[in-house]
Image (cartoon, rainbow, N blue to C red; front, side, top):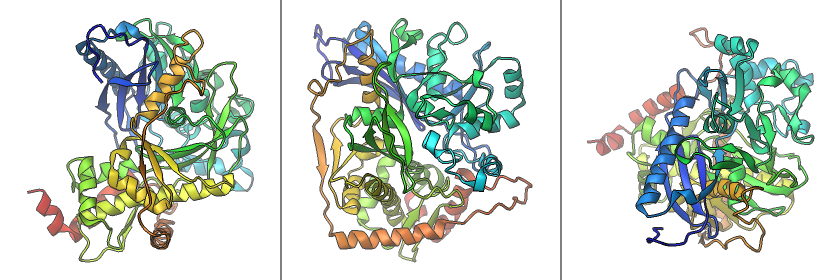
Length: 554
């Protein structure tokens, strides 16, 4: 990884990878795709009320500045000239909604995170205006069902409930964007000429964007009552948007992709039928469907995969979205306190090698694909006196794999040609127990690239390939061959099917948990997600497994 003095590295490309849990800045060699250095900062998530998930946009921005500065320091220590960084790409958590004041540069409210559930009453109100209360009514235009997940309902909630935002809209001061827009605007000058834009992949996750005309849809904006003047300009995923300020002043920001599209590019899934699964806070399986949008009959989303240049074709993908993957490990650490680090979960699970009949459905934010069932809540079932924290750790990892199996089954039905292996990436893929479990539960090999930072790599590729930069070739013959680690299934398919059937039984039991009845505190929000739901389950488990849990914390 280190370069000796005088090494001719050639041009470098930086990538800002702003995720739900952390921010990173990574620098790659544009010729070899080698990762040279990076820095990571964890981001605080706030849970001010039941079901609410927020982040501070200023903290997100500050974390980017910190990561860029620290990575540049590390490069200098490696004797690498940072003036060789010729372009920067941005990859970001999608759907998360920010509104800010363009005259002061200040956010007008915390960012409402994609996992947030406060908008359920907004969704229900909007559904009442749709013929037959059909939540798929806008799917032919947007590829998305009406859900708390997407930006339009979050923005509608902000306009309904935050006086400062209503006033800023009336005064012509408000700007809306997903995290990419907030970062690009801030990093290209902010109130002093910052560029207010987004790319097609992020725009396609708002429910305001027509994925066929490739423009903000006036009728959708009218339905959600969103003023179009606050929306960012939609650009391709690979072009120069503006120039950086700060530590890398003057370097063009020339790539922008929502994190899952970035991972698809980073995995080099450029052909129709190629797919990848990313294990982050959530879990996201995307299959490239080429320049044709394919609509799912099995609960998957249709989304823009990428457009790698203004004059290049738009590619589409089918997507299976799982809300809680890595977040379940964070929950075991932060809420139950049965592990001190994410790595410890792998160790606990490996010690027992089985959940001993315990099944964990982490429906903390309802169920996403393929169910789209907002009434579901997290459950752990099959507990006995023998169950301990090791079995719960194993069941948590198994839950990630079962959820992937559900969306892969849906993908295979929609595409008609079953995948014969699964390409994977994301932070959780460092967990070898999880990867072996995934191969066992899918009954197909799981293939993990030796350099797992494919999300950042995809953003770097888009930035380096942009017109006016031109230092990274996306020609198939020029792409660097990737070395991979392979996990083969090690259990017989009958056992896999038995465990999967039990999981499906547990999923059914998680549904219909919440009703539309108001809470005793008068709050009509029906969703009880991360904070309260977590603590109820925490208390139950700590009571059941007290002797095991207390034994580890001495």
